[in-house]
Image (cartoon, rainbow, N blue to C red; front, side, top):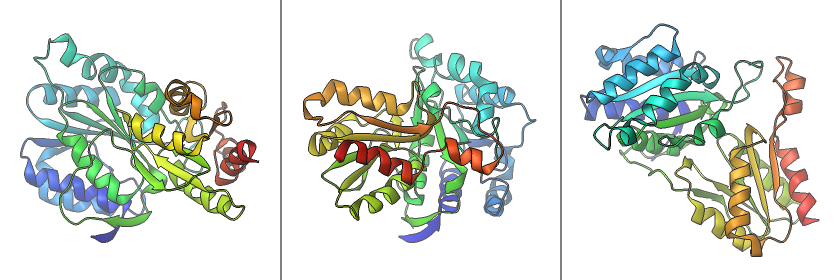
Amino acid sequence: MSVKTYAQALGEALIEIMEEDPKFAIIGRNILGHGAHADGEKPLMERFGDRVTDPPTSEGAAASMGIGAAMSGLRMFVHFGTASFALEAWNQLIHEAGTAHSMSGGQIRVPIVFHMYHGLRGGGGAQHSISPQSMLANNPGLQLMMPTCPGDVKGMLRAAIKSDNPVMFIDQAGLLGTEGEADDARYEIPLGKASVRREGKDVTIVATSRAVLWALEAAEMLAKDGIDAEVVDPRSIIPLDEDTIVASIEKTGRLVTVEESIQMCSIGSEIAALAAERAFSSLKAPVQRVARASAPVSFAPPLEEAVSPSPAKIVEAVKRITG
């Protein structure tokens, strides 16, 4: 076990799978972003450059190449960069990767990971700040993972690559420089397994991706006021670990969801529905949702901050149902 940055753990997972599986290949460059972490990609290129393809700036073409290669027997990783531009490959993701196994009567498998960076990033503007996870989750045949910390991104990415199903692996660029412990050994964290990041008894906060860090910060702020918050990180959205979430709600009796997606038809909305269906008798107060405001994201930092979730907004939501 050692301390790594999120970017280091992500790159380590890719190198490990390259070493283990000669049929694993990558389509895409700048997997670790364009900033201070970009150099982390050099070992991958130096050792396995013959299995890394730098495609034209056409997400649809990159997705088509990856899906075809996966159908033909390779295990693929396609990097889109900004999640906003995954929309350019929507037909390939939804109608090809997501349906091939079912439409072929189980004869075709599509072992492919589509990797992208979602969310607010400080100056991304309306076209580089999308969080499409709820849109992707609404399509059968796709699995969806959203890590939060270095230890998770390594194990979850290894599991995603080894899956025989198409996996949407959605990271947040703001996490790349964060540090945390990650095992130096090779390991997988299975899809569909949530993590309780903080134990508590008064309220359950279910948060995804970078919002988990905001939730943990909010929990410390709430503790000063005598409110003991439990923070649950689903990690995997499809499949979703419903049992862990429901058990927490039954324990605390209150639920707040936090995410960077727009609130309408969001992951938080699904978790709120889960609470109504499986833990309604345990709820002591209405469910609260903290999400991005339904407005295009401005380039101006103060306006971006205005539409973004934050620890302060989480605290406000919790106090509405605990006061």
